[in-house]
Image 1 (cartoon, one colour):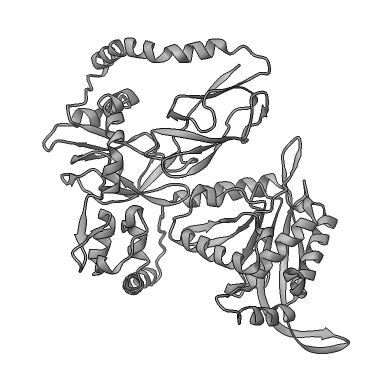
Image 2: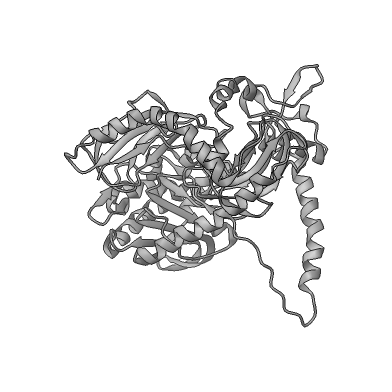
Length: 541
């Protein structure tokens, strides 16, 4: 049966999307999980994944065209299926909706007695990433009774990928908070209510608790949203709160950035903004040098209480810590990988003496600084080119041989692990790899990675050598077929030319998906990787 695919809402402020490119054409087979198109939102160009399988029967928005959220994007069904009825139904839907709307509203008002007072806006949990199904309120920047201006940061919301600032598109007084700090709620559920001070919204709150506050209720008073969006460009480009620098010029800063700067005693005039039109945002203040001292003091202050808690003589205690959205996503992904892909592991030891000397020479060049991990990433990319079986993806019916080499580099963050991706790694030199890894790692630690920067890897490298770990095994980062675990460089006695000498060695462990990579293939890959690392000049040739 044919299914209508609508223009998705890929960001919290997205009202319409532009189809940058179609990855499928009419008549192509579509599997669940295939990328249908690349869609440009108001924030980024993102891949749009199909949740249906069948044949692409119709494309409703051509490349370069713009369409509102929830309008017809495509139709998927069985090959040769007649979908004209769906097209006619979709074309007539707006008129029918308008004619039936008054009756629907009258019926709803009669059955639920929940009407939104004039000037009141119901704010729902936004979808801040393409895979987000629920969000956790990390912190509220406003409390009930506070004045809210358009552009103010209402709250910090934790998704499955990052913690993001949620900006208000309405102004008024914060009348009600529906999700408390630390609590989670599904996308589109009641987050807050904004309106005129003193307005009674108890009926809306009760309706929400009873489950009778529907999308129709929440959007009933938002018919003027398109006009607001039309005028929004100027409002966003001109921040609500500004200060002046020493020269009398205006300094643009988000409310949250101002609050953090004030708390830390930082002069905004000393900070260079990275936001739109030079606007100073949260990360600019947090990355400013004095912030590190404040964080250190906060850490040392927290330590005594933790020790005191732990030192209760003869007592037993358990602390319950709510799982973050990132932690849940990691658990789900790694659980699926471990229990669906048959893992096996191969180990090899590499002589790193030549690599150490080569690195010293490379780092003597101006504006150049590479790490051993950069050398491993480069060697892996070159080895993958020679052993394409390792650069594959398993599907039930076919094995996909990736012609491109995108290496994911595992980065530890306070809440877990993220894997930013180096695209076309085999075409990068070691210095380019170093620059990009540092930039992506910094974004990861500041929770500023975009979904696109964490997708599309064909192989993964995980390095715990800097923590002194000599050898370990990793869980495959699907849909990759393998992941390389890199241990520490250890100085120890080795045999060279029949003599025992002091050498530097490093252990590598390759975890392979046995559905795509056999033992001999994995072993040959490791031998090639070993050759590159033991003779770094071959990587520079």
